[in-house]
Length: 312
Image (cartoon, rainbow, N blue to C red; front, side, top):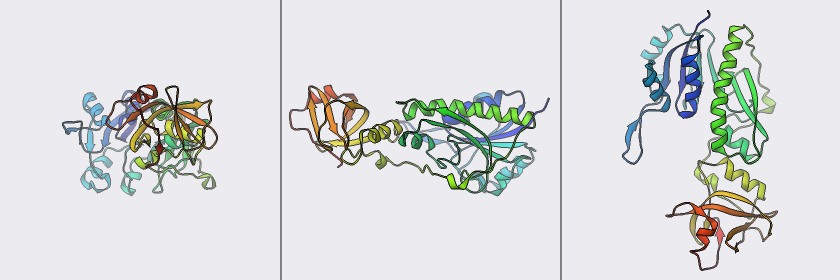
């Protein structure tokens, strides 16, 4: 039976299902798990290992942690001596230099949660929702020094539900990534792995999102754009505006039948309504700074003054 010697590079919980598949696959000999160093976490700021390292510890898999794998000369020599067949990378959070990219007989393969060359970069899940796409997917590409630009060896599509949010799609795609890895292994076993060059004319990017990207501009966007932003940035970095000068997190919104002027707000029988370019939205689940998350009705019960929604 063919056995592939493999190293795995990953960091967050998103990387765990694929790691679990590799660790339990009959055709895989998982030699090393490589990840970021432990970080302070929680209220007590105690050191916490990345989720893939916690998994490796539990399963007694060899692991290595580093801030920069490219500078770990001694370890790279040790890894080279493992005579790897290939390396798998998923949400590792480090760029790989030539030594790592050339590790293993077949090289390094990255799992990416879009149909490349669409949405190269750190936030493909969020950008698919932000742009209102009806489908996304999982790609596996043989890594080169240019970001997400290597030849494709596997792609499969995943339909996006109309109101699916970032948290839901994230969860589904982390398991789809494991399924894609299984398909990759089957192709290897059957000598059916092919390298397909990406079409550079179709490249788009999904750069890292920042907290300020969550600011809702009701006066400048239509209702669909606002709803897409809310679901794309759930749970992080989240979306917000300002209500009577206080920061208001918007957790859920829905179209509303009564139209008001864009950028304005009103209390309509206990519903917090804001106007957009083409209609109105009800901000049905919200959180005012310093308060717990609640319904719009609960919040409005405590406000006796005029309601003003703003961007600052």
